[in-house]
Length: 280
Image (cartoon, rainbow, N blue to C red):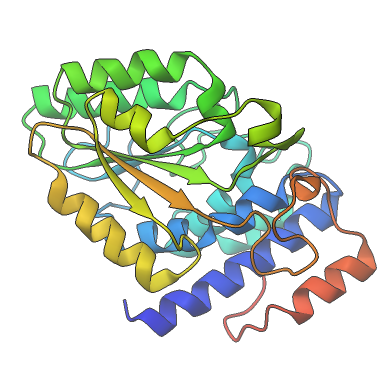
């Protein structure tokens, strides 16, 4: 898909995010807005998949969202990619909705392969799924997304060590490196040091993406990550983003990690996100 079209979709996805969270006065807009370019590039340009969804994912690329609190961007992209009706976004976080605050599997929402939101678990799942593909002779790639604050969880590092030891080289894990988490900047809550150096020390091939909110740079980096698969090492993208990107009063602060905009703030946000695609 051409670059300008991808950018248009990203703008519409951002509109979806702020509208969904505002409608129920609940949810996580900050990280969702920051990861929009990545998610749009992944589902509309990079991955090979079938919207006739099956949980086993045989013969197709699969994605696991570890930082499940950014479900608004996940649901928006899944619906606009054709997994389920766009109109269903209006049910976000409502009783009996398939679009729960954190993705779950018992509602059988197409595109969701694991329940997520308990941080630190997605790396283990992604590594296991990727190894399964290798053992089954399936040459497709497993993608996963993780928060930088999530890297404070110890389970990640067991899985990171496991993936390198077993040469799980069909895995591309992306870290949303926005420097923010729910309680404040990551360097104040628990300093992460150099995640790049840590992953390299654990035996991964690491690629830095300095402009994670630049669609062209996201695509180039993800293509480079694909080219690095199959060479004996799992791949990690260190993706630097701005939390709340696209809405000026939300950008760069942890304060919008899990806060919904009021009516005036919604109007302000939508005014900054002009789109011709159409709201749900």
